[in-house]
Length: 98
Image 1 (tube, rainbow, N blue to C red):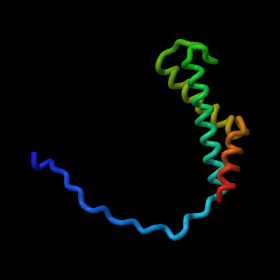
Image 2 (spheres, rainbow, N blue to C red):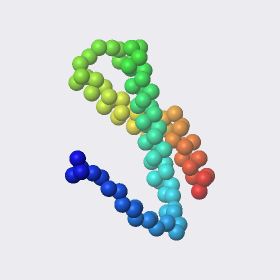
Image 3 (cartoon, rainbow, N blue to C red):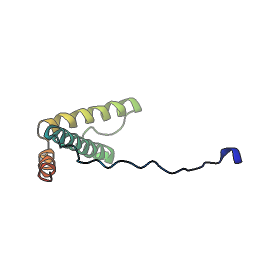
Image 4 (tube, rainbow, N blue to C red):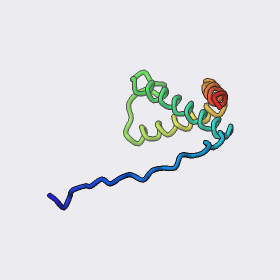
C-alpha cells in the first residue's frame, strides 16, 4: 500500500501578469456567435426530444446522430446571420466592460 502513496509538494508560485492582454473585438464577436449557436442547438434538441419536435419522433442512432449534426450546423448558420440577436447583445455587453 505504501508504494501507491501520493505526496503533495509545494506548488510553484505564479507570476502575476502586469497587465491583461487587450480584448480583441473580433474574438469577442466570434465567441458571442458561438454561444448563441450553442444556445440555439440546445433549444432545437430540447424541442425534438420532447416528442413534439419539428422532425417528429422515431429513428435509429444513425438518424439521431445525423439530426444532431444538422441541428448544430443550422444553429451555426442561423447565428452567423443574426440569429435571435443575442450575439450582438452579448458582444456589446462585453465590449462595454473594457
